[in-house]
Amino acid sequence: MRLPWVITPSRKSEDGIRDGAAIKVTTDVVTLAVTVTDSNDSLVTGLDSHHFEVFEDKVKQKIEYFNDEDAPISAGIIFDLSGSMWTKIDQAREALKALVETSHDDDDFFLIGFNHRPELLAEFSRGEDLLSELNLVYPSGRTAVYDAAYLGIEKVKQGRHRRKAIILISDGQDNSSRYKYRELQKLVKEANVQIYCIGIVEVREEGLELHGRTILADLSSLTGGKAFFPNSDAELEDAAIQIALELRHQYSIGYIPNNDQRKGEWRKIAIRINSTHKRTKLYVRTKEGYYASPR
Image 1 (tube, rainbow, N blue to C red):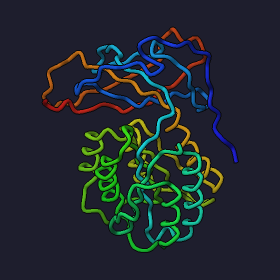
Image 2 (image 1 turned 135 degrees about the vertical axis):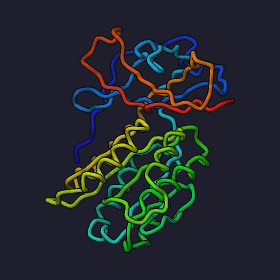
Image 3 (image 1 turned 90 degrees about the vertical axis):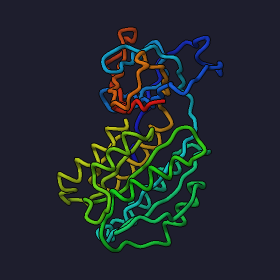
Image 4 (image 1 turned 30 degrees about the vertical axis):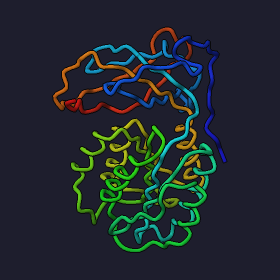
């Protein structure tokens, strides 16, 4: 099993930002979960706040909060139990087991299974408890991906940890949801939740249809997450482990927008590594933006 590398450059402490320093937080702070990788897609940790530049609608913002600790998260596992998963359920269970075993010890998870409709199979609990619940269900029926994702996003807001994530494991397009994709997309934009997707395919199978791949990739990209489309059991397990590692090696960055006029408009976010970092080219992922809702 190949594990993704985690690269940690040398670092210096920063007074007032790190080492448990008190940070003044207001309701106007925009918080970002930020992932940094290199050209080999390896995670890069150990950067400091001065390495980052944050822009909102192309206007540079002042970073008010910065943290890179390995903090626990509240996460929802949304698991496809439609009939087309019958030959893949065992591999998917093994991948989920690898994800749980690689996660933070204090993470809490809930489990939603879905076929023609989503169902909450397990409330927030330890990851090991979810695995036992998943052993009791079997695939059948059609696929309601959008409904399941909608329910998961609403449910994860109840989690006890500040950071929230959804891991969606599915093998096909939606063919049974009441919600439309545009409705789900709007909810995703409003929620401060990262979404990771694993599109499961069999060895030598062509994979998800292009539309299904595009939907999963779009949901992930909007939130700063990532979509994986493994072609083998080994790649499937690698994808699950990579998601767990990424969630444990992210930067948390906060800023108070220069623009204090909040009229419900969509504001686009961009973040980059500046010239103070002298290593090879790095790549940054975070959510694409947020709605500036009126106070």
